[in-house]
Image 1 (spheres, rainbow, N blue to C red):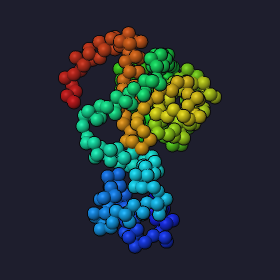
Image 2 (cartoon, rainbow, N blue to C red):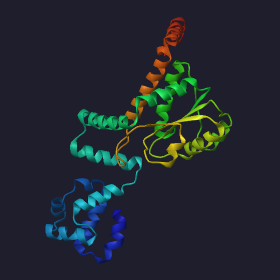
Image 3 (cartoon, one colour):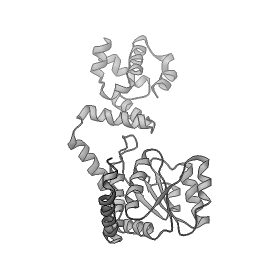
Image 4 (cartoon, rainbow, N blue to C red):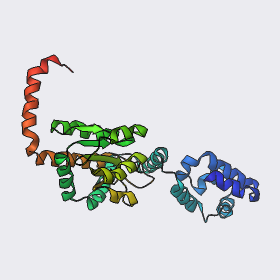
Length: 278
């Protein structure tokens, strides 16, 4: 954004203005912490000259420029991490700060997600003929944990591949199946295809997402929302994992606590435990 501003206004800037702009371009990642006094002291330019500079590039003051830069940040992993670290640099990283962020995100999540929705999701898992899941990018870990936990309960999950290979897997999807879809920040093309095809093939879908306003959400049988912070924040997976844990516990509870499987597991470990040391 700063480079674009410079191209638009460079012809009408004074020598001092160019010096200010050059400094801003070199220190764009630290602008959140820069003050007009800092610029005056570092560059040897009067505060009056610096005050006049902002109106020359279309802003009332430095604060308004900072606000515009923050809103203009691209929603990429780097920019979100950078924005979060900028906030943490000012306030300091502490367990209390992290717990506060998680608490706020948890509260926002459960203002949307109701207990009966998790009951419904558990019901879908238990009654499904076969359960498939598509967990790309940051949600890959969530999919792996769910696969591991569900296997203990006797529910086998099959991972769906990304890219054009997904068509080879889709030929097996049919009525009575359940497809778990993870789509955070955006819904990948594969997710869109699986949602659309569910109407033709007759399988059910559960979508895990942090999106609230998206036309495609209505295509899923059930949407489980997780708040992961503001658009330009670093997006943690703590709350999505918490929601997933609740679903795992709900499913286990619906199956009678999984006691039979747990007893069998203990017996197997006792019988063969000495053969596997890892």
